[in-house]
Length: 286
Ligand SMILES: [Zn+2]
Image 1 (spheres, rainbow, N blue to C red):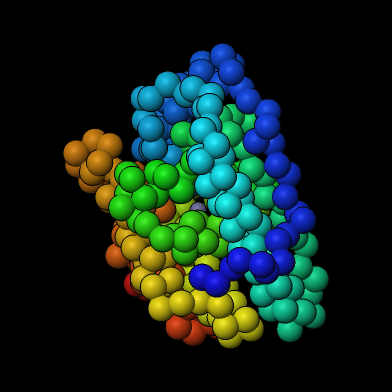
Image 2 (cartoon, rainbow, N blue to C red):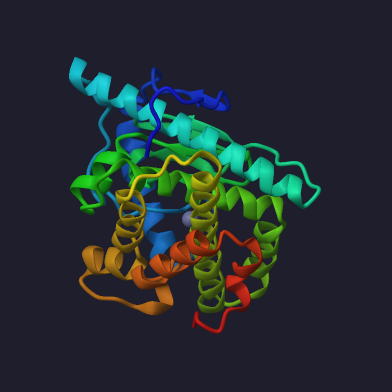
């Protein structure tokens, strides 16, 4: 994506200077166990992409070399530009529907931090918290995308940010609130099926964003969509589960298979049409 020198969003809460130290070490392990339990036993609020990362690895506060610091600062600039792009696109799409887009805040952290959905650690992977309307990301996730999942390229990270913004769109549209009701009413297996549809819709919204971002600004390059699809493929539940447990149990899916994630992102990108993203009533999803 052509991003250098473009507008960076100011809706960013940069907590990277605050390190968790020893607290991060203990909390990280507990957080991972809790997240794994949530992932495989039923979806939880504020659990998202890449939650099985660094499964049992202790959380240590990082000391960055000057080169790593420079790279991380560049990544911070990149995600701020992506966030600004999501603001411009969703501002426009909401305005077309006579609505006002209330912007989320992006929280950048390293190690661990607190959210209204509980403590966030780098092992959590990026997520959106409907309790405070914040998107949480530890930029070291970009290394995980590349090294653990083989999803390289800047647009892989853009897709992840756009997916989390997609969850914010769902909050603004009342879909998140419906999920809360279903959480009370449905069995775990049935609720997980809704959760898959929620996640695939967030992928669809990420695609819709990419469509309009390119239309408005002409900033995508030809590798970008492939990078996004590659990332969607890499973090499908079936693939993450196989990596974590060696087997795949569809009842435990909360995000959708790799194939489903790619399908819905691509559909959003190709159509740019919000009305085609009703994953909750799509016969294509079991
Ligand atoms: Zn998600």
